[in-house]
Amino acid sequence: MKKAIVLLSGGLDSATTLFYAKKKGFTPYCLIFDYGQRHRKEVQRAQRIARRARCRFRLIKISLPWQGSSLLDRKTRLPQHKRVDPNEIPSTYVPARNIIFLSFAVSFAEAVGARAVFIGANAVDYSGYPDCRPEFFEAYRKMLAKGSKTGVEGKAVQIHAPLVHKTKAQIIKLGLKLKVPYHLTWSCYQGGRRPCGRCDSCLLRKKGFETVNVEDPSWTKRR
Amino acid sequence: MKKAIVLLSGGLDSATTLFYAKKKGFTPYCLIFDYGQRHRKEVQRAQRIARRARCRFRLIKISLPWQGSSLLDRKTRLPQHKRVDPNEIPSTYVPARNIIFLSFAVSFAEAVGARAVFIGANAVDYSGYPDCRPEFFEAYRKMLAKGSKTGVEGKAVQIHAPLVHKTKAQIIKLGLKLKVPYHLTWSCYQGGRRPCGRCDSCLLRKKGFETVNVEDPSWTKRR
Image (tube, rainbow over all chains, first blue to last red):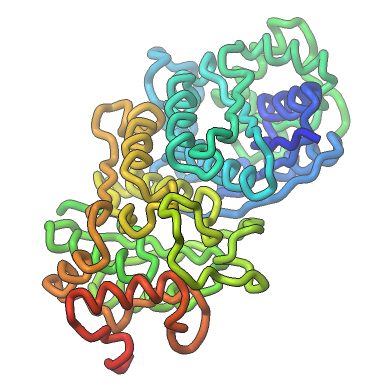
């Protein structure tokens, strides 16, 4: 049995990553974080996705004084347009979020004897987030080789970011092949009852489904 | 005001680091972790030390299924002797602990606009812990330069490990000069009412005080 820790947010990318890891023969163990995100709905969806995939999961609550991120502060306005400069860091950036998530995942991996961690990060649509870029993952791997037990023993936990170079359309295509239950995924940054259709995340998702010419099941299928 | 995040465990090393950071002109903001350690007493001591230093602090609870570490599992026997091979990883290793702690600290630093993080790690006495070695901190810094907002903006949060090359005796000498309230610090891995005097941590502390020829105030002074 090849155990893997999968970071599962409840969004489209991480759900696809989970099913990808399964397809590759891993037995995933999902980590779901409740970190005070305004779209806490994704936490519930993540748990439903893990159950649907018949995977074990663990919910981790962390409370941080993450002021300054529009993803956490309901008083801040979410960006509702595509950024002009793709390298600009969006206001939805949460300080060191993926660094923290990966660190928990590596810790879990060492504790349960898993050799792999999967993260659904994507550098094409999220080039603005430093912690979604391939050079970050490369540096993180090198850090693990020095600073973890398995690392110094020469069998470091492997960090897999299989979607890092894919467009949203390519991810959706892959996910449809893998039968990812996209109707359960949640992308909207707003915490509303229905996706707002206007935030960055909704717009990216919409464009992705339009490109592959498939209807987004989150609008049609009952959940 | 130079803000700094200081990782404060309640032990001798991190307390010395806190007072060192103050001496260097920083305004420390302490992070204290309750992660299920069997010597939870250090968490209370850490809070008292922060108060004594007149520093703000924040207690962070994290629960992880960290099986396999004798520092967490009360059913496991703690090592009670000096290791023969200094590079052997002791059973008290907690998977990726410093990686997680540093990641929280960096996140805090970015959130509150601090440019520095202090950690009391030490590679002389704790050479067995990969996440206490200088090469780990070097790799961690490089990772931050790639994966954090301040990093890609060329003003990465600085990771300071001022004790990394010091012996326990040198640390105590420094701390005595800085008037660290050592009677408040707690080193023993056991969660008892008094230090056990037999675990690795007690032995190291004892040897340190003996070398500088000073009585350990945790045995003499009222707390």
